[in-house]
Image (tube, rainbow, N blue to C red; front, side, top):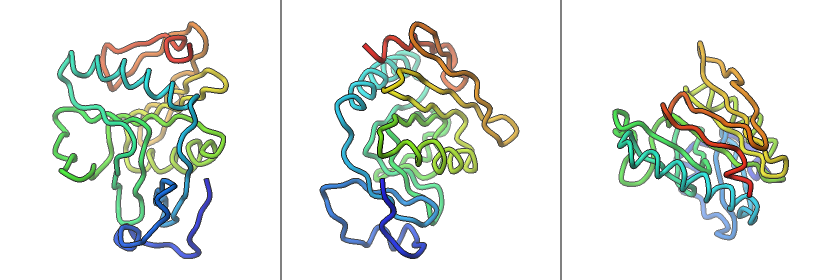
Length: 184
């Protein structure tokens, strides 16, 4: 991932730019960040998580799951495309016909070599600042999942799960999964 603009720009300016369609772009703190398409290791984890989470959310009828690419607008200088996100039914008003306008309840980022720094630092801070209640960082290379929960406006690391360990979500009450289900 690389920053491609020399000055801080707004979401409006960002949306008007003609960018190379061979890449994906996000706006983080006014900086355009270019990223490549995910690799198969990333996509396998994404598909498995998406399937498990979507089945749970649909069965319980508690909200809606989305997968990248989907624009999430936090403010005039932040527009990200999380790998996966969940929005509770009672907060469905933040979903428009075009995008998501506001903080999802749960965001999941799946690390790739090129996104690791941004997902662990910049997006961690951004999601914490804008009130994303739960943030998962999925690491396919280490076969682990970090789960962070927002407590008193700060993320607390609930746990790092690997191998046959089970994670539970506070946002998706009743949902749990064994990490080995994701990294087969």
